Structure formats: structure tokens, C-alpha cells
Length: 54
Image (cartoon, rainbow, N blue to C red):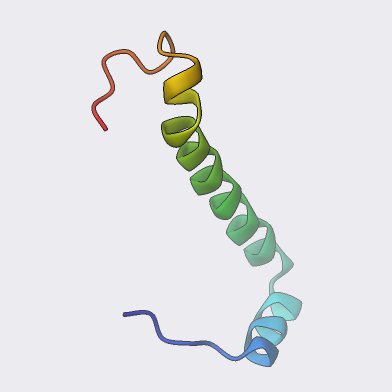
């Protein structure tokens, strides 16, 4: 499904555009925090996820 991108190609892209690296990092952190909110906190803190259908 996803095409494998060589690491040196990624490094070259990030050297050209450092903001792309921060953007990519931000997206990863956002997805990870959403995943943790849905998986872990749904059991510990039901008030926060009330009304959210998983």
C-alpha cells in the first residue's frame, strides 16, 4: 500500500526543506496522541470520551 522511500532520499528532502520535517513530526505526534486518547484514556477517563463512537 505504501511505497518504501529510501532513507537517504528522505534526508535529502528534509535538508532542502526543514519545515517539512517539523510538519511531518507534528503529524506523527498528533496521530499518536489521538491513538493514545482513543485506546488508553477511554478506559481510564470516560468523561472525556463521552459521545465519541469508537
